[in-house]
Image (cartoon, rainbow, N blue to C red):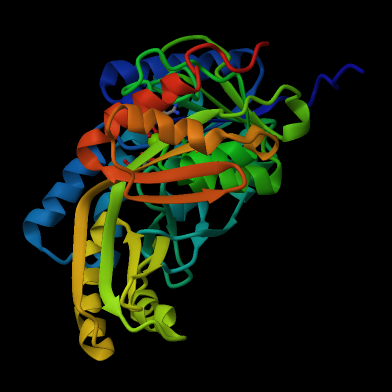
Length: 416
Ligand code: ADP
Ligand code: ASP
Ligand code: MG
């Protein structure tokens, strides 16, 4: 069946920080968008701030105050994207294309009021659809929105991917293309495993695990959104011309490797309350105040010692470590626990693969690989398609490389 000629293919292109990191790179992006437009495609562009800019702004905030007010952090951090969108609009206009830059509030990307980690609730598509109908290319600031009271909000670091997917869902784009500084999703971070292979196809489910477990290549909410709204999603290089990685549903991908990839997260810290009485209700007494403080708990392990008391260990994000430690000290007094221990020099390394469902022995292979390198496993957690371990920070690279080698991931796991 041939497509009706008047229905243009609609794409969302998202370019990350490195891809717009200099005037030269902005011109390269303008050339790429121009090629799409010349091919008769409609394009909505979503941009990150220029490389290093959001970090710089975050650094400034930290110089000014130890405790940063979340509302003001959002006002500050969302300013980086204002620069890149205006520059790209200028570069496209210079090439003879009509283009218009938009901040989140100008599109009206409506979010909840959870500053620094807001969720998108609605996107007004009127202006975007009007522009597209009139041959204008909208260029939207990623990672930011507005709450119902008019406050600026941001979506968490790396959140421009989420803007792109949400916009793609809202305007019914044919594909959301995440252009970045690698040629696609790899079996592990290519910065750590040089010979990691590129995955041509990965399932939404696996990608969501990889992203949630720390793979920076896609923001977890972007994957969640794409899966939920059926947005075809592709990760590809803004520096080359490959097809990149398609994130798709499982049915499209017949041959499932046991392990598809390895993720890691440095953003971890571990806390232990030692010598707690082993009675019902302890877990909720310990974690209640942590939850009340809006601190997310990830792994939890509880051990009953020989004396019948319990040691209770859990992990939180590093930024929440100090606060969680303070809260535990208060709980310690209440519960008559022996002591509190904390360690914020730990990392989490995970293997992910839908093929694990039907294959035994994945955990053993992973643990053997770590044992062979003398790496001590401090905590373990598993789900149907992933196994995570906590190890000392200094072993991160070694652990990722050893596990990658143990699963032979340097050979392409999916032949196409
Ligand atoms: P952008 O600025 O384009 O959003 P990011 O730095 O957020 O780029 O994400 C791209 C980076 O993600 C890569 O440079 C790479 O180091 C890292 N990365 C981590 N895990 C993976 C993986 N499995 N595959 C590809 N890249 C990965
Ligand atoms: N500029 C923001 C950041 O650096 C958002 C993004 O790039 O996705 O986190
Ligand atoms: Mg990113």
